[in-house]
Length: 279
Image 1 (cartoon, one colour):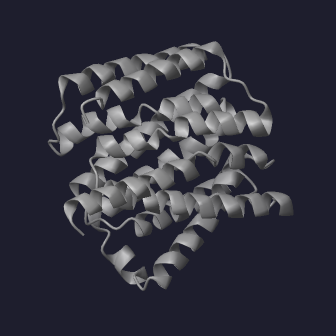
Image 2: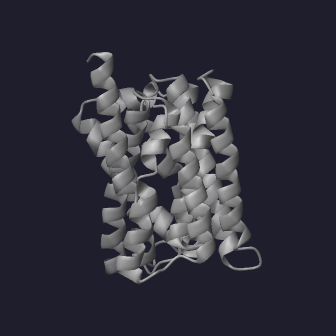
């Protein structure tokens, strides 16, 4: 493909990933099982489906043997980020997680500047500081409440995924599906230590199988897409999840965000848009 076609294809892949990722909170809340059980079965189904996908493409061996240190790093970071991401939905509002995730493009831009040398303009630096302020507004409103732990887990998830984006930008030959499957598999024994993961209902099993499929599709499309476009732009497109996730939360659970979430989210989204005005 020509450079313009590669860029357009990357935008399409990351857009698909963002739309699919927006359903994560709905799947997590819909399951009655505990957080570790959700992570276990989601991870197992995601790993199996991802492995089946790459086997169908005839690249099963290549995806795992060509990962290198960069692919292994993505898998390990993905373990903690995924665990934080899914647990956050059990501990705070879906909208809080979505709004904090919206700051990912600015974290990715800062990290890409440090690790890859991608240009960091004054506008992006200003926006990054503003976005951090927006995250502080959201988490500050949760101080002293049950939601704070969930908000902090969402923040780590955001940082972890931003790091993964930059790794793929720096080492763009790193395979996408292999590290995603490995990340899911590494979580399985950890989950089994904390909960009786086999004590799951048939209803939850169906929900988590669908969740695993969605997560596999979202993970692979995001990592393949970020190879083709700048990390900051990829994360910016990923913020499509921000308006979709709270709408789904309202439709499925009648969950209405608190005022601080609206305020902090508005600051973050304004900062993201401001950082990309020239583009």
